[in-house]
Length: 349
Ligand code: DAH
Image (cartoon, rainbow, N blue to C red):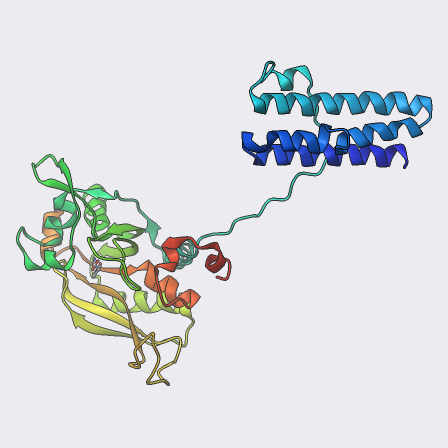
């Protein structure tokens, strides 16, 4: 063995000792000590090999060996909680800054984050800017200003978690049930023209299954100016869906009801999996179409509630579930995958 090889072995012994030490509880300390410091322990054997080197080298290597041994013993004592514990690093500082580090697994972005980033890019390209809004909301922002008066049956569509805390008007605070709240905040805080989007988490009191969860994500977008029409909405929705899924997807609007828009629409896109060719497709259930968002022209009552004259100012709004987009982008049929954090599955995405 050359002196360089001996040194390398010494450092290997030291490193494997430190990493084993870090990984064990007090129960395994004695076994570990024996493995390294025992008569046939790795460190003892290595120090014994020193006798084969000529005197000069033996001296230099011996000093290094003792230093390493001291550092190892001190760490062991520290772990045992014995005398001198905690001072080990000061007494015998030993670290070789030139050693390569331990490899550690690099993470990757969660599929929902990837989807939010994709959507964000698409909206920024269309001239929208991102706004923020809070998860805990007042009834006014989540419902009332969005034209859901108290006791309106449309509130039933969004089974709500209420907090045991009151807002300034004496009503219970709630966890927002949708991201449409950002419309009211933005319209009150800023002046049009506004082109804004907001991705974020929303909450509904629902049992978890393959397509429902009590917490999920939505993205809301809206555009307020003079002379905004359904055609602008149609074009914008078409553009961002095509940005995400490619220009061959078809987009269609169907009449629907949401209290804060009039007219309101449900938007569907052609099935990216079967392209309408399979009557058995589990994603579109054979219809060839997948519902992806709700949209419409902002209701005059929403404009009035936020201080605008509806004849002068108006706009469109849309809201979509982010999990739905993520499921379509990554080909996942059960949204629980997103919350269970099973690395075996997430690594495949
Ligand atoms: N906020 C609605 C929901 O969560 C989705 C929605 C529908 C948003 C129509 C909109 C819209 O902006 O115009 O069910």
